[in-house]
View 1 (tube, rainbow over the protein chains, first blue to last red):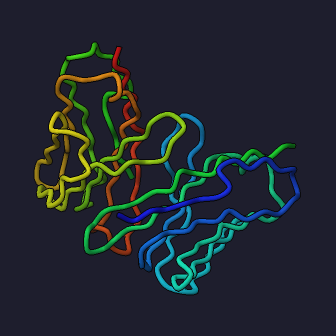
View 2: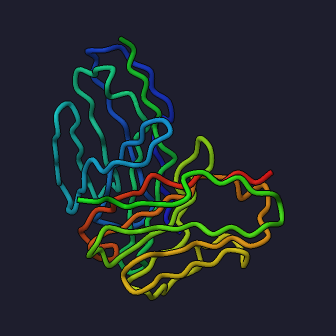
Length: 111
Length: 115
């Protein structure tokens, strides 16, 4: 079974700082998804990464995928309080049509 | 346009009772997924539908759990003889196609509390 590990699980940072969330997975896949979840809310899709070397950016967030290393990163640039949320990465196995989610990284950006 | 909707938003039930959770996907989305999220944890994949077919039910936690889908429309997740460990938020998502290059759109979830 595919395992997806995120680290750190908790991240407290000051506004204006940069940081990276890591997502490792155990089985070959070239599809990686990042989601955001605010407290008490559902998941919002952030990025869909579909190939090795894929990089996508939206505002202060940038996601990348290295399928050879089975690693995706979510980089936060000059964090602001509004980015406080839990971030999940997910991997799917096309042949099996299952999605596997990481445990999530709870980000708290202090004003 | 309308997103994925789920009902009820909250459900409190007594241990041993049956519950039925409903999901209305985005119109035109052929794939539909059910997940369970326990408090403070990640998402646990339960089942997916392509149309009204569910090829893989191995994610369902026990035989007390079942799911159906009508065509490419509404789906229901039924939990029989609920147990306290069933307490969680049940999330439904839909996408244009199974797995694939299409992202999932999530509903707001049903918070189930078994007392």
